[in-house]
Image (cartoon, rainbow, N blue to C red; front, side, top):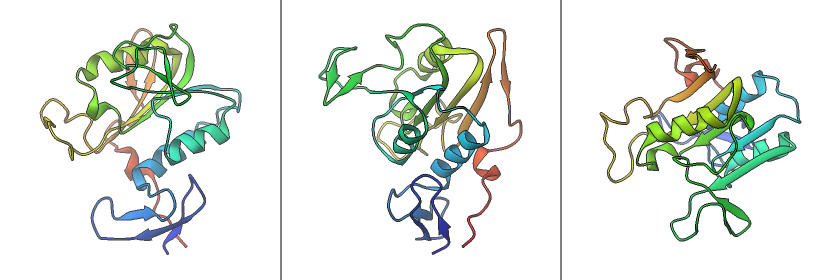
Length: 188
C-alpha cells in the first residue's frame, strides 16, 4: 500500500514501475484520474455548481455524482439517436452537443477524446456549453487504441488539459506544467 485514493477512498498500490504503475485497488484509476479529482477539489466549487461529465461510469463520475447536485452526464451510443436515452443515460455526441450555450460551470472528460473523430469540433462544443470564464478538464489516453494518430492527437496523449475559458481568448492555467506533475506523490 502506498496511499489512499482521493476519488473512492480505497487503497492505492504500486503494481509496476511504469507511468501508470500506481492504481487504486477499488476503482483502478491512475494518478492522472486522481489528479483531475484533486484539481476539482482545489477549485472549491460549491455543491450547486452545474457540471457536465462526458461519461456515465467510473470513479471520476462517481466522485462528481457524490460532490455536485447538478451533474449532467452522457455517453455516445452508435445505436441511439442523439438526445434519446439508453439505460437511463442520454446519448450525446461531443462534436454536436444538444445543449444550450453557456450551460455549465465545469465540463470534465476522461478517456473520451481519443475516440472522437474531430476533436476540434468537440473542444469547440465544450467551449460553447461552458459559462463564460469557467473550466474544462479533459483527459485522453496515451494512444493504446486502434487508429491512434500521434501527430493529430499529440496534444491529448497522456496529458490532462486544464483550460480557463474566456469568450475572447483561451488562457493556460498551467503553462509549462503537466497536471499530473502537480499531483503530489501519495504517502501512506
